[in-house]
Amino acid sequence: MRVFKQIPGLSILRKRPQNKIPFPLAVGQVIKAPDATTREVKIIKMELDDYLKMYFNKSFIFETVDQNNSSKKGDIVLIRKLDKPLTQKKFFSIEKILFQIDNIVDPITGKKMSHEQDEIKKHLEKVAQSFN
View (tube, one colour):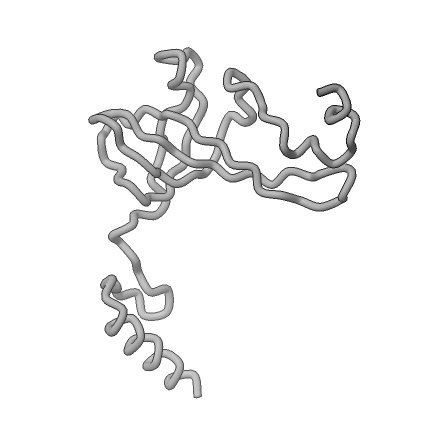
């Protein structure tokens, strides 16, 4: 096992301890809602590998507290570290919902878009024709 520790470039594969919180404020996506006030949020951070001189995605999954019970699966949320953790796993609380999954607004027209692919394609064709 000691041989693997000395190989450069493997530092990105090492796991970080769960009790070490890497940041006080972060943006993530809700991936699961186990109960009424608990949400699992996935946060992606870019980490530099010193050996390869490249950045790689490092993902963290945290259980967070949603006091308002307003977030759903797929929402992009802003989370903040709690001063005093509620449990051993809940270190963060959801501060604000940045993008709701069901509330997609076209930035050009300002209209809400539906999820059906045909309507989205028609809308994009209209926007492309308006620029030509």
